[in-house]
Length: 109
Image 1 (cartoon, rainbow, N blue to C red):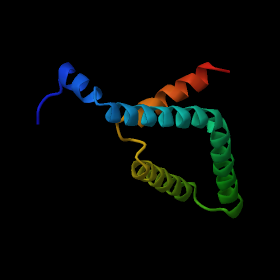
Image 2: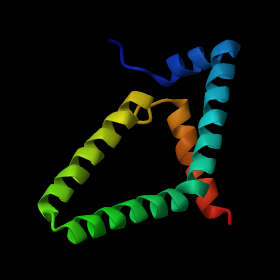
Image 3: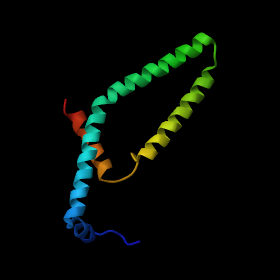
């Protein structure tokens, strides 16, 4: 596998089709990041309410707190696997656009 140099990157980006596709992917990631950052606080509140309800339910039934924490660990592993399946953790123009979109949403109030 050859190491990418600046000249090879410029040669690839000089192809208008590749550049247009990369630009579209970047813009899609930008939009996704912007919208995600705007709804992030609502998602966190939703998760916090579910977790709080779970703890209160366990305590009212006399269940074990260790069992609940075990279920939360399983849930976090499932969420991570779901993100991997969706490709959120892949590197590419969409991921870069996503990060830029999140930053724009956080800086713009």
